[in-house]
Length: 592
Image 1 (cartoon, one colour):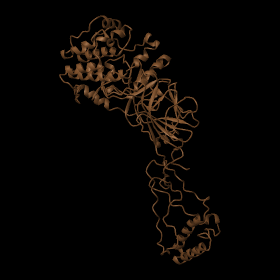
Image 2 (tube, rainbow, N blue to C red):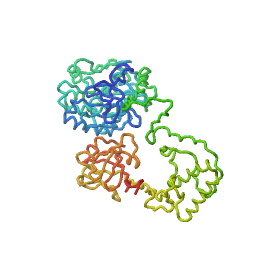
Image 3 (cartoon, rainbow, N blue to C red):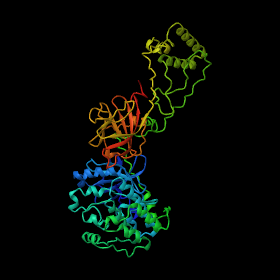
Image 4 (tube, one colour):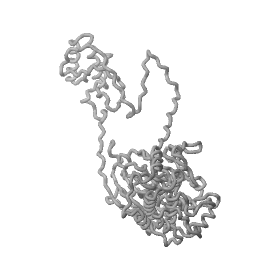
């Protein structure tokens, strides 16, 4: 399943601007352009947090209102997320439960086969062989995930620089469940259906092989094998008549005619299709050069590779008018938040008279003038903290040096040293001449309870890894266990359970989950920093490689990496997970 199906038209019309009824974001994905629309919904261009372009298909609201469509759509998305083939556009994210269901796939910078043939004509034989072999590899992976495409047609095949990409697998199955298909909404293209599909009989992987033969004929001749016209007329010819292969090149005849056999059992498997392509190419191994497509089609790929970025949201206007600039009053620079913007330089030292030498035992503060409230920016640490009385003594020393010379300063400092030796606080007197015991305390004599203690930082705990855990629906994991393994039970304040309702659940008091973005690398630091907390993550949002952060109410943290799902014919429903646990990590790396 995928969501990329651009409208036909020139390359300049590929990235269409968003219109008034188009959303600007979908679940945090900022939309950059509209790629097209079809019977199922609209397709938009966006990007992952790491900058990879994605195509997001938003399903039409009529389908979203049908509960049976939603059920099948969720099932197909879950299956499609297991499809990881070289010639498919992988599904990387989806929401099947929202008001408007949607799914996101990797963006493929290339025209559809329908666009390429309509604009530039039929493809050469060598390109057709490479096209069909790549599509057969895609079908092999799709069928291996338990999916029958059902709607394989030229507009669902994208032409990339390194080969074709089959998209939209499984959507037709979900659409078949709705009453809309009988009320004016058509899903599937009659010209590329198989006889059993047109007759309403059982659909199997052989149905996709028949469609593959039709796509091959279209790519080689520029016309459907059973002609065009009304839906009823085309479907009748598919069921009862033979295809028109008069314009098909001889090297492709055996491949296409065998795929278009009326009897599904007589059609070749996808493995045999690849072998037929190799035979027609007179090679035992097909080699795909970089220029496997005609130059005019390759030029369309270049244009589509220049995907636009989303429009930047302008900052909100200031509520107060800016103060007028006055050359006599220095403008106060705006203070950036910590970590943003260039550091603010300290003011240059003011000139002062060079003081006479100071005895080594005198603790005079350096006379460089530093603002009292200098903000801490990276690279500019705060000045060292001094006792309040010590700072006053230092300033007094500087003043004395400038007025009365070194002799008086020496006497003052010597007197101060004597008082210190006798138990009095250093500095003795304030600028006003009064004693201030609270500010004159020697740091060595300060009560530890009154001083600012240096926080004790606990080191991060070592991770414990548990690979290949098969977590069955109805079972749970406890991260504090020495050996993390599935235990029966899904409801009982468990730290992480696989609910039979189809979701991961953090029921324990204080427990949370965070579903990391596609491509986001999970770590202890990432899990600590992310605050998109939830208590449930539905399985249909997960795919191989997707990660979930787990925080338990008992202070442990974990990272769950999805490695796979049970096969459809498995007697039990389970997920295969890799789990990393940092025990007592909630309170480490901070004050104890």
